[in-house]
Length: 141
Image (cartoon, rainbow, N blue to C red; front, side, top):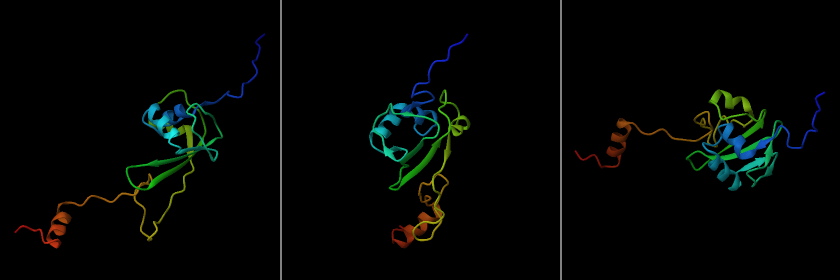
């Protein structure tokens, strides 16, 4: 006869820093820990500062991540699974459902660039740089 052990409250749960790493929201566990300790992570609307906070399916993770710009990229992720390892992107994408709001237009009505939500301007090409130098009177010819 096989005995079933009673389920502990932590059954089906994983550490928050480990889940962020498995779901590829952080490049390393130490970076995930810094993200949590900086106060940019919320679980079910509550700010979390404990790296070992247990999360599991049904929890909602809110991340405020700066992608190299002055604007924060806010991600709202619903946890679907805990994950066993840090696998490829296709495996990591199955750990959550992205519920992030996607703005269609910016404050001035212009389209927001990139699917990741980061606002970036494209770099000027050689022709645009020549025109800018000419307009500034620094043509040199």
